[in-house]
Length: 362
Image 1 (cartoon, rainbow, N blue to C red):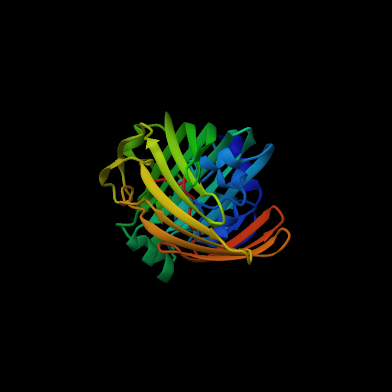
Image 2: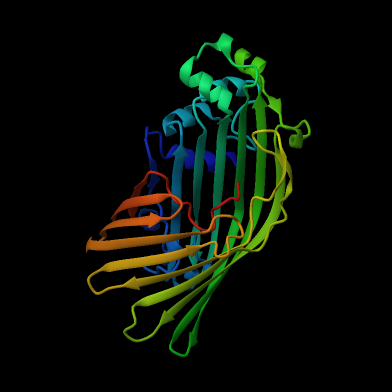
C-alpha cells in the first residue's frame, strides 16, 4: 500500500484553493458524468467495466488520478500527513496535528489506478485514501477567535479518521455481443481489496500537550484495522447501429458486496455500523453530435442505497485533434470545467465529484 499511495501523492505538491484532477479521465471536467461515453474506452473502463470490450490493441498506463481537498490547502496536508500502511498520522504527534487544523473540518481524498489492458482483459491496481481531520465546535471556535494554547476549552475534541482501500489487483473483462438494432457490451470487474481504517482522537489535555492522541475503541488497542475482501462490479453499454449517435450505460458497483463491516465510532464517540462499500446502481446516456460535441447525463446511486444519489450533466467540445474543452454540473458538488490536450486532462471544481467505482460510503 505504501508504494501505491506514495505514487499517488508524488504527482502534486502545488497549493490549491479548489479541487483539481490531473492527468486522468476527461470525465472529471464534465461534472463526473460519462458512464456511457466511449471516446476513450481504456480510460472509461475504471467507471464502466463494459468499456473493456471496446479497447483495441494493448493499452498501458494510469488514469482517473484525482486529488481533492476541503478545508486546508493540499500542500499543507501533504506536508503534514504521513501516508503509510494503515494510517495517515503517527499517534505520538496526532494531537498536535489536530490542534494545527482546528479551524475547520478538513478532508483529503486521493484516487488513482495503473494497469494494462489487452484483448478485452485488463489488470490494474488502484487505491483510495479518504482522510479527515474533524475538530468539534468548541475547538473550532477557539482556533478562530483565540488560539492561545492555555485557553483551549475543556469540552474540546479533535478526531482523525482515515480509510484506505487498495485493489491488488482489479481484473476486468468485457465482451461485445451483437443484438438486434445494435451491440451490447458487457463487462465484469473482480476486485481483490485490502482495506485499512484508523481513528484517533484528542481531548483538551492532549491538544494542549500537542503530542499523544487516544486510539478509538473500535481499534481495540491497535494503530489501525486491516481487512481483506472481494467485490464484483458489473457494467453494460448499449451501442445502436446505423446513424444513431447515442449510447446507454448501466453500472452496478459492488454487485457482490465486500464483506467489510464493523462497529465504529463517529467524531462524537457515538457507535454506528460502518459499511464503507455498498451496492449502487448507476445509469447514463451519452450523445455525440457531428459538430464534435459530446453531451452526457448520469444518474448516480439510483434508489439512494448508499446515500449518494445525484444527477450529473456534462458537455465536451472538440476544438481540434487532441484538444477539447469541457464543463459540467453535479447536483451534490456543483460546477466543473476541464481541458484536454492529447492524453493529458486537467479539471477544476470547487468540489470534485468522485468517479463511480472509486467511492466510499464514509
